[in-house]
Structure formats: C-alpha cells, structure tokens
Amino acid sequence: MIPQSHFLILGAILFAIGIYGALTRRTAIGILMSIELILNAANVNLITFNRFLGSPDGPAPSGADGLGQIFALFVIAIAAASAVVGLVLVIAIYRNSKTILMDKINLMKW
Image 1: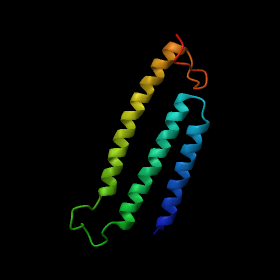
Image 2: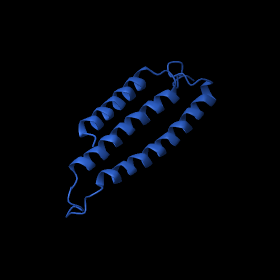
Image 3: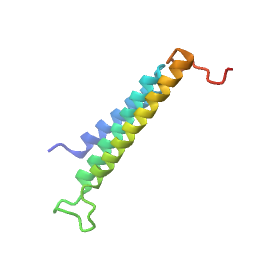
C-alpha cells in the first residue's frame, strides 16, 4: 500500500509546477494549462484525504463516504467549463490583437 505522504507530495509537486508555469509562461494557452495543473493537484489531494481519512469500516454513518471523489468530479466539471471560457477569450483576444503573447496584449488602447 502506498502511504498518504507520497500522494500529498505528488499533489504539492503538481501545484508547484502549476504555479511556476502560471507565473512564467508568456502565452495565454500555457497559463491555462498551468491552471489546469493546479486544479489537478487539488483533485489529487481531495481524493487522497478521502481515501485515508474516510471511514475504513464501510459507509460512513452520515453518508459522507466518497465525498472527496464527488468534490473532485465537481472540480473537473468546473475546470472543463473554465477551459472553454478561457479558450473563447483567447480566440477573441487573438482576433483583435493578432497575438497570444500576454506581454504584447494591450486591451486598453483605442
């Protein structure tokens, strides 16, 4: 059995890579992918805590068994919706400014 610390370290590494990517990427697509990495790190942590802190004797009395997986599904759905909205914004910005480099985009000019 793999210990809980291995999963938490994996989640922390994914989160750190996502933060680093979001702060250093120049393109909007790269930033969106880094944000997805951050959300995946949160999913790893949610499922890990549910697995190791959940009820070992079967279903929890309050019906909360599997709650981490349910939250992870909600995070996946929200991440998919935000990716769609982000890509639509990238396409709209590209049509106006003809670039996806974040430091070249100036939305305030006339």
